[in-house]
Length: 355
Image (cartoon, rainbow, N blue to C red; front, side):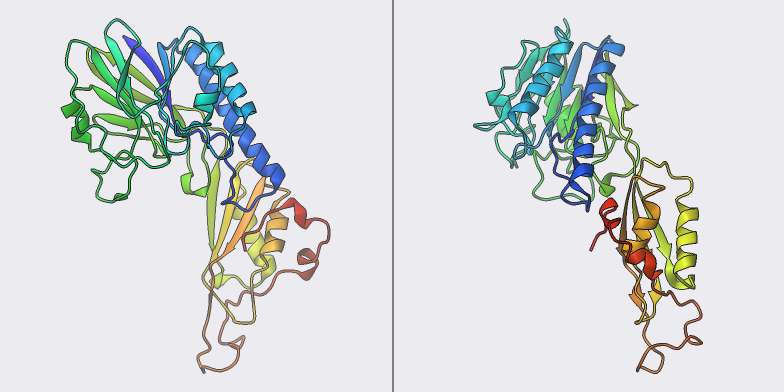
């Protein structure tokens, strides 16, 4: 029996530029990405694995520094002599000047530094076949010509997109279909590229070990792959500590700002205080009223680590077609927030608001 701990899409040094957060919060998130990789290395010892595999996007090439490389080399050196096998992806391709090329890696680290399949034996009867990206785009089907034979159990390691699903990106990275894995002669494929856990018959994605934004809400995992008699059992192992959560509130039935705050406080009461929270306001409002997102975010920052407010409300049209809807015509009117909150000087730096 052979055990392989697998992860992908760590995205060290991610800018988090898609989220409206302070520099301090972005630094904290980058630190949490390093911390989860350290926990994965600890798990490798705990499970006494035969290898640690990483299927691409370990870091983001355009933001990685020499210090990033030193961190990774030191972390992987801890695992020696356990092999660490890395297949570069589209965000961390093996290109001139990349960390993969510049860093002096420990002897237990193998970087799949070309676009041809290469084997690494991890036990007397299990071989990991890996291939890496040599640029930010790699559109060819890398499994098309791969045909393996022999008594060894072959496990594939690469960063690619499953295009056998009904909805797919025609410009996918290393596109493949599930049947391609079987035709190649491999028992299973350990993959990267998708950011949430997914297992199919012939392959599995561990997802990013920490969520990278509100587009990857939920728990996140590494993967423990057990190879036994030419079959592979892939199990998720939770490693994430950060949570992202979206809360939607329909303001149509909300009378005023005070009530909206009470509704919001009730909705977030059971959310962990360390969560990253997005509040999405929906429903109808009058033309004269506009939700004060700054005030709402400020009101929540004492309860939650991070809050951003998105206004997706719709302005209700007047039945007469002119002027503002009267109070009688809009019994569920939403009014602006308390001015004293919106104008609280010096406190707005503590929260983040999407505009």
